[in-house]
Each structure stands twice: as C-alpha cells, then as structure tokens.
Image: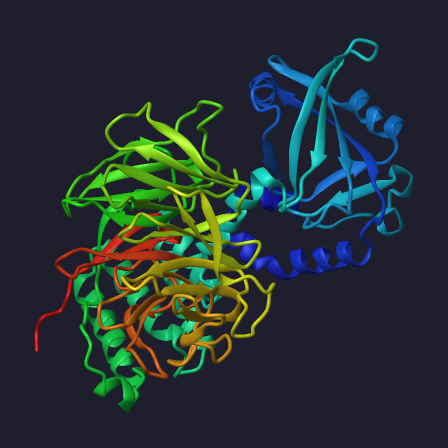
Length: 553
C-alpha cells in the first residue's frame, strides 16, 4: 500500500481508496487516548537532512501511512540492518504525539493486529502533520536525531492555511470532479475525462452538478484540440442550465431597483494568495478614494492597508509596517475621515483603532484601545462609530470630547430587538441612523438615533438561503432612499432589501462558491463609486470584483 502511495499516482490511489478508508476507520476505533513517544529509524540522503535542518519550526506532511515503534531499542535495532551509501546518513525520528490537542489524523497501537507483535508498532494515518521541533546529533550512537511533534489543524500557524484550503473545495462538488480537476491541471487529460464521464453515469439526470461536468468536459476537449467536441459539450451545459434555471419569485420581478451585470471583473488581486504587491491575502474591508480613482483595501493576513489604482496591476502599501508600535495584527476595516486626511483603521487583534495620515507617514497614532473593534463608520461631524464584536454593541466616539457612548446593543449577546450577536460591519446615514450586520442572528438591524432597540430591515427569518433569509451577513451600504445592500457571506451573494420590503433581491453572486466571474467565494464587504459601480471583496478568491451597473432596459 505505501509503495503505491509513494508513487503519488492518483489513479492507483483512487482505486485503493476503499482500503485506505478501512484503515482509517480502524485507526479511529483504536485511537490512543494518552500522550505517547514513538520512534522510527531510517536512512535518508544528506540533501534531505539539510532540507530538514533548514525547516526547523515548520511543518511537514506525510504522504503515506507512517509506521513507528513505542520501543526505542527496537526502533534503533533496524539501523543495524540498514545499509548506507555515499551521501546518505542514518537518522532516528522521535515523535511526541498528544491525541488531546484537537483536530488530528488518527494514530493507534496496532500490535494486536500485526504479525510482528514484538515491534510494538504505532501507525499514523496518511496526511499526518508534524512540526519539526529540533535536530541534534547523538554522539553515543553516532546518528542524527530528528525531533517531531504531532500538529493539530487548529495550530495558530496552520489554521488559516487549512481553512483557506478548505474554502477552495466546493462542498457541493463530488469527489470525482475534484479529482478530475486536479488531473487536468497536472496534464492527465485522458484520465480526467474518464472520471468525469464515470461521474455522469453515477448522478441523477437532474443533479445540478451535471451542468458543471458538461462544462468541464468542454474545457478538456478544448485543451486537447477537439474543438467540435468542445462546442457540443458547452451546448449541453447551456441546454441543461436553461432546463434547470429556477424561476424568479413574482415579488422580486416587480421590485424596481437598480441592476448590475452578473459578470464582474477583477480590479485588484486575483493572482493567488501572497504578499507581493500584485497579490492579496484574505482581504476584508474596502473604501473608495475621494477622487474615485483608487480603492483602499484591508489586506488582513498581510497586516497592511493597500491602495490600488483602478486599472493598475499593483497595489501600494499605505499603512502597516514592521515596527513594534505600529505593527498591525489582522486589521478588519478602514475608512477615510471627513476631511480626507487620515485613514482610520480597525486593528482587530491588537484591540485598537489607529489613525494614519495619508500625507505624512510619520503622523500616526492610536486613538482608541482596549476595544474589540470590527466595522467602522464616521458621520459628517467626525464622530466615529465602532462595532465592538466581543461585547455585541456599537459605540460612538466623539473625538473632541473623548466621549464613548453605546448607541446600539449593550444588553448582552442575544436575539432580542435590543440585542446583537457578533455584529460585524456598520453604515451610518446623515441622520446618524445606524445600520449593523447582526451576523449570528442572520439579520441587519436599524437603530434610529437615541433608540433603545433596533428594527429588522433585512433577514430576521432564521439562517437560510431563501429571499427572506441571510446567512452570516457582513458588509453594508444604504442608499438615500433607505434600500439596504448587504453581503450575504455564507450564501456567496450580495442582496438588496428595498425599504419596507420583507424580501431581498439578488444583486450579484448566488451562483455557488467558485472563482468564475459570476461567482463569489466568502465575500466580506462592498462599496459603490459615484458611477454606481459595485465593488465586492471576494475574500476566498483573494480579489476585488467590480460589477458595472446594467442600464439596459
């Protein structure tokens, strides 16, 4: 089995998937309950050892079942029968494995199931992740000791990477389609096509995934020069789409609101996850510059604010640097002050709000601290409104007076009209009416100035996908009429709730999670320019999408 896994031949792995699953179930059933120290002896090349030494503190993933022994002497004895060659070295791997640390691949003592019971074997599941703790040389036994620690998926350094990886796999896709996409990217077109056609035979004729498979087959045919066949597959995809397209509710058909073209264009990012100036890493908040020529983007996982000129290929870092005092930690939102001189930044993990001059990089200071700040807004008087995510409330801060006043929430976490539950982004109109995305209540609340409780203006019918529901709302905008535009994050769409309406209207997205131009993946916030163009932070796709108003009648 391990020989097959080490070949990394996807076809063979798929054929043996049932055996792999059975072993996984066995390991889970006999999972060790207490911390264990195990050993493994082997011979590796000097180059491999050098690579390990350079990676101390980092993670390695094992692409096969990993056999170890509880018995130190037994593991060491294997080296007596191991031959070394030029440019190779003997090593002993020491592993500390704690089953209580959280999400881990299973491991178990399989001595009772092994024909070599005396080996006291502990077997780790494929994909187990370890942190390289240290590498030392044992002069007594004349060998190198590689110390590893079993890592949890919840490890702070691993968690955001693993979460992002999970976001890239559409949970609505079936395994064979994911496999086919991987094979296609590696140039194994025939095998990819074989799996897609096999999948067509397995799923119902009305399954929504069928249209996507037709499209995948069309792309494969095009890549391999079979243009006529490609056209036929795309025609089948279009035909299937027309047959299964859901009808639009009458209430939405009658709603007179602005419309936007469903296909967006990428105006920032879109070059994969990274820290280069043409890349973003988990973008969050967004604001349009006063001259309407640039956007300010909160580049959360790069801990910086980036200014990106519309039509440009690169961004410019305008806030955030590697000094101890002004090092951001996962900023969330940014606004421009009423005089267009300063950026006001929600520095979430540092629990503070920072003011940063757009003209003088040395002019920056912390204006609020000890607050779990999320969304920000400012009225024409310069009063700052801050969402306190952990206290489930919104506060107003008057800069000249230093006053902090709770203006929404303040009654603990809950779902009453005078409560909020994990609020995120806010919008404040000219009358100081506050609109707040009440995330875990799946609604948008409106708090009139001085009110003791809010009014539900979007959602409020439980978590769901219908036109009356939201699923973890975030970014907000309210026009002069009072129509509420909201990012419906976990439904991968932007909705509009006309004032007084009990139902929302789809604006963009809503086509499942993906990276196509009419799809969104974990959207976070939005903004409009003076030309009514809509900008959406497409967080999971590390890009900013621009949707142009559809003025066709």
